[in-house]
Structure formats: C-alpha cells, structure tokens
Image (cartoon, rainbow over all chains, first blue to last red; front, side, top):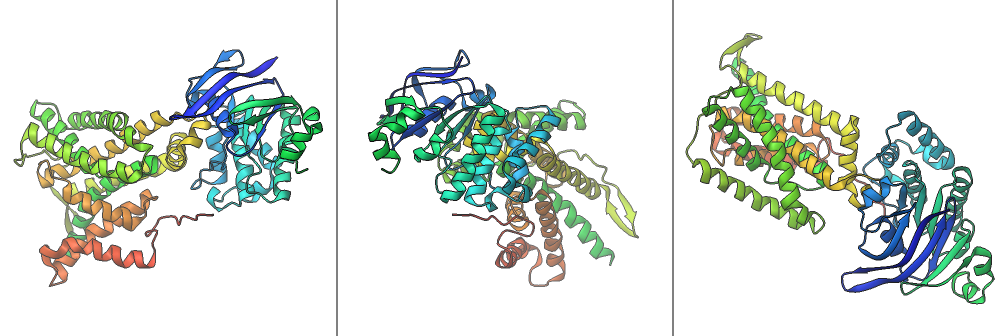
Length: 236
Length: 293
C-alpha cells in the first residue's frame, strides 16, 4: 500500500524554480531516501510535502491530495517534519518541547508514555529534561527534534539532514536511534541526507536529485552498487 | 509614618495600573515576540466603549465586561488584518507599525469622542478604610488586588496551560510550531486578544483617577515599558513587582527627596532602570538567554 506519492511535483521561491518534477513513492512502513548535492532541492521537497512552499503537481498522502494544505493541517494528518536546523524551541525546556510536539493529542497517558519512550530512545535527553533547549549541544538538539516529532504519534516522519553539523559518532548515534525507531514503531520515513552512507543505514529505496529533478531512483542495494553514486556521494 | 504608608499604598495603586499595561506587553511579547506600543491606546479605546455604555444606562460592571469582550475582538482583528502582514518580515518594521497604530487609535478616539476630559465612574467606592491606623482608599486596595489576580492568571496561563505553552512556542519558532500541528495564525490572534483584555482592565482601573482622554495612558505606557525592562520581558511576576516598585519609589522620591519633587519624579524609574541594567542586563526577574553558535 502506498502511503505517500509525489507525482511530478514542482515548486518555486518567487521566480526561482527549485523543484522541476520530483516523483517518489513511499509504501506504508517504508523508508525512502532523498540524496543529492547542496541546492538540488532535497529540503524543498520536504517543505513541499509539509505545505511550507507553494507547489504544482500531485502530492497524495494516504489516498488524499494534500497539495495546498497548511503545514499545521499536514501535521494533523500524521506527517511530522523534523526541519533542517532542528527547529528547537530554545526558551522552552526539553519536556515543554516534547509537549509542544504532542499538541494535537488529547491522550494524557499516551503522551506520558511516549515521553518515556523518547527518553529511552535518546538517553542523553533524560538528564536535560528540565534544561532549556537552547542550552543543549547540537547532537542533543537533533535528538530533541526527532523526539518532538515522535510525540505527535505520526504515521510518517520527514527527516531533514539529521547529521548536519554533528560529529561523526554523534551522527551515527542519531541514525542508530532512528533505525531502532523504525523497527519498533513502523513509522514510514522520508530521509533527506547529504551523507548517503548514513541514509543507506535506514532507507529501503532512494532517489537522487539534481537541480530539482529526480535523475535516478532505485533500492539502496542498487544505488550503492552504482559507480557514479559511489563517486559522488559515498566518498569513492 | 502615616504619610509614608499612605504614599506606599498610593504608589502600589498607580503601580498596579502600570503593571496591567506591562502584563499586556509581556503577553504580546511572549506570544508574538513583539513589543506592542499601541497597547495603551487600545486600552483607552476599550475604556471609551465602557464609558459610552454607562452613559446609555448600562451598569458599570456590565459595561466593563462588554469593553473586555470588545477588546478581545479588537486585539484579534488588529492581529489578523494589520499585524499579520508584518509578522513574517523584519520585526523592527512590525514594532514601528505598532507605534503608528498607537497614533491611529488615539486619533480615532479623539475623532469619535473629542479631547475633553470625561468623568469615568469608579469600580470601587471612594471611601477609605483604616489599616494599621492609616486610612487607605478602598480604590487603591481594589486596584492592587485586581492586578494581583491578573498577574497570577497570566503566569498560570503561560506556565500551566497548553494554550500558554502553544503561544510561547509560536513566538519562539512559528515554522517549527506549525510542523508540530499548532494553528499558528489562530494562536497569534488569541494572544493579541488576551493581551488587549488585560489592557482593557488597566483602562477601566485608571480612567476614574485620570479622567478619560484619548491620551490618558500615554504616560502610563512609558512607565509600563520601564517596568517591562526592569522586571524582565519574560516574567509576569517580575514586571508586576517592578511596576509596583516604580509606583512606590516615584511617590516617595517626589515627597522625600527635595530636589526631585513632582516635576522630576518621572525620571525616577529611568534612573532605576539604568542602575539595574548595569548589574542585571536581563532585568530583575528575566531569564538570561543563552545563544549557542
């Protein structure tokens, strides 16, 4: 069953066309990678799904056309966006950040349980639960951003450059947790990542974007085997 | 001694009016990240609405309640149709827009009701009661109590409720808030509405003392901003205490410090700010912001 489908999606910031026909398909419980260089349109693809940019083409989630919805409406359908730069609420504590993530939920008990789950998934956050988010390290903020998304009990997670600016070992920790989350929850994912090696630890399929267009789509194994992918994104 | 206590109680009472406006400013700032210079002007408009209604024979309490409802709608409408155009842009532009808005609402009040001083009935009796051998006006006590309630309610809203948490989240990072499913635009409207309600309370409290004019709260706004800076932008309790401090010190200085007198007492809060900010740049009760790069 397809959960999310993008068909020939276009997007522009003012006169500048950033997406020029992106197509992808994510099955229920699937994880899909978007690879590509800086400025290829990876982040914009996620923003298009979330309704943060005006788009053309078709975006269908769970059988429903969602193009043209506002970001909060898209979130309400069960798509949680972990933005590039983490989007922490700096003056709120870690716990308050998690509560904001659970804004749309009414099940108090379930919220408390999920906070516990997040702290189990990211033990670093346990000690910082009362700290302001702005006092966390970059890695902790990234973990908090993922945890905040989990708190909305989403059906799909959009992850934007979760490794950006992190030390390699920290980035690996974050992706280990994401992989565990995927196994335990079955949440579908769209993973945008410049570090293709990390992306391939999580995703089943991926597409490569170049100047706003999908140029190559395949399974992780297929893509990993291709010379041009290895040269461009896997460091030789 | 009697004179001293009297001055302190009166100071608390005028300080309470600054506090109400200061609370409204803190509320808008917490919910939108902006300082709204029009807060006083909007409050005056609310007071005029109550005044018009009492002239029509509506009982004072009902008239004030109606002006509070009016203010909520006014605040929400101003956010929806005016401020929204500027919220995504440069915050400096938005603040300047609120200064323009102050001029506009003051002008509207003057145009509708003229610039003459109007008598506004007092919510509290003008009698005095004896406290510790000192006669204190019931109005001073009542005004102070109302502000304590407003302060506790504001603090509880931000710290204890989901709405308060959502308002703060929207102010800090609207994009991220929307990704978490918060209806950002509706929350901004509600934030402005609640702040305008606090302003309306201030207007109703101060109008009997100052008599109603379009510029009635211009002075109070200056003191309220002083209280906001002194108390710390993030702390409802802090700004109320700062406002009381300003009200009391101003009164005491005018009487006991010979060269200050009534002409120079307006300078007192600013000297206080100057001293405090050298020692504590985040204000007396504000949180220090840590920026990690």
